[in-house]
Length: 117
Length: 109
Image (cartoon, rainbow over all chains, first blue to last red; front, side, top):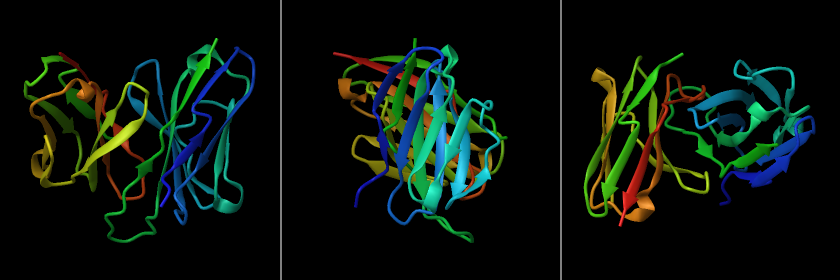
């Protein structure tokens, strides 16, 4: 079974440009999460989808970030316009949790390294 | 949110040495995981360990949920163990993970 995949693995753009990151979760996983690690700091939560709905977007830093998950399958995270402080590694995770007592955990993708010059 | 503190922040070891990494968290949790971020930035899941002890080769982990801490043991360290080790907790299954600031480990030959 394929794990969580992310594309691209690395993106280098200039300040003010637009970048779109993609995440393909494990097949059948309703939950999809975005996280990021910037400036060598801790990894922070951005948002959580349950199928195509945004369950929690409390971690989104500002309105330059737009996440979508049309059809409840893959998700995209668009940064427009990108700023220098957006540089870091963006991780996607997915889980099959559907409520109740469960040991379902989140499985992380390899991340996309974003460099804004 | 939950505060997650890791210590030490940085660690340099000679190859073959043993080490213990610690993770303290501020609230009861349903899930705790240890991750290794390798030099390429990838997050590798090491242990899912909300309580108890687990071992996988040279690595083992113990979580004492009632006292809100977890320990990661690395024995006979190798240069490939270098990278950042993160502890992450989830208060309720399905919610977000809260990550610690990580322990940066460098193993020198």
